[in-house]
Image (cartoon, rainbow, N blue to C red; front, side, top):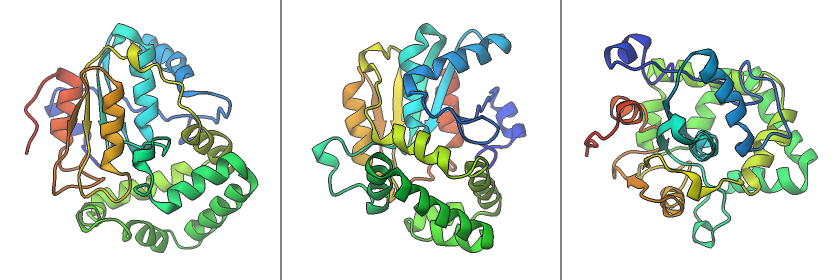
Length: 257
């Protein structure tokens, strides 16, 4: 969350924020065969090492299944689960026609034609390496205006560009064999095992992931809430950082409307 809240802001909120890289991203080595339900072993070791008994969990976009899986597997060590701009695979008929075609293409080819997906990602990686600034603009200008306005804030843009670099640290193959394969396959999450309070935030102007996905996921989890700001999009985690992080860390807060 380097571009969402500074260390000074988090400290002023009374929050200790720990952000592990998921497998194949940043400094976390690829683990192509790992499933979402297996991730708790890594996080359990991390919590033990840091002497943290209980924690809230926050997932944004592609972090959705990882965070929900931790809620299902870490038991009482998870106090709350917050999800922002939920990623949802189109395995529910209600989502057909709402998921961006580019996302469907990557998910389908990763499952049925992984070599083609590899070539697609390799092409994107080459485009990024050739001109990172142009790549950033082309990837973000396709979003809703409210998200463009947030993404092009200098501090946010710097963070997003760093994220692009971290995504490609291990090349494109781990993205195909691991990340996209997992997203497109059944997630294997025991929804009934999630006992901690769960809250979804999804802006109704989100052009990256359909808000209906958050509603469908919330239906599967007992007592889950959905907050849908009408004038915000996929980047709502930036203007609502304090609200979201505070709820995950400390419990019920009144959402800003």
